[in-house]
Image (cartoon, rainbow, N blue to C red; front, side, top):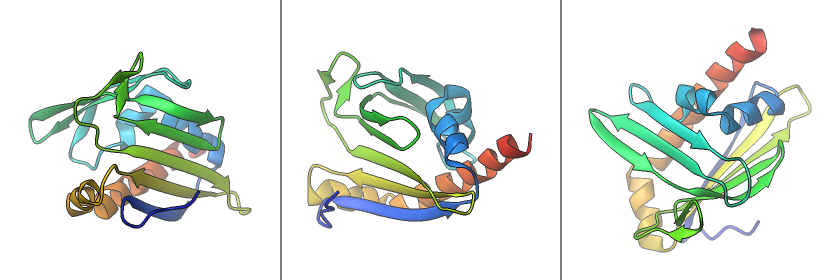
Length: 157
């Protein structure tokens, strides 16, 4: 994938959990609720239809403000890659004001862990800057730490 620094934000981390467990976390609503938004905020609801064109809907509660996010999967590569966007909702209904397309990639690191890459692609440099200013690196970094902590509880169970 060729990244555009004008419109894309990305980072890579090594997570000490197997790729299969991280995949399960990212593709199961009960698991999404455990890590997908920085605490103390919560995911109140999650609906996943894991297929191209299938819904990926989440509802967050951030300091008492309920935020519904609707989207669809654009690509699903079992165990390796998820691509989703808020540019459409289920049935390919266009969003009035799309924000981003997210790409989450999982690769075995050769030591029992996973190389995890998260990329957010935006329609304009202004949208990218807005996302960065909102705290993309801190927020998504916190989410990855929460994912790793939660995934470890599943491995140890």
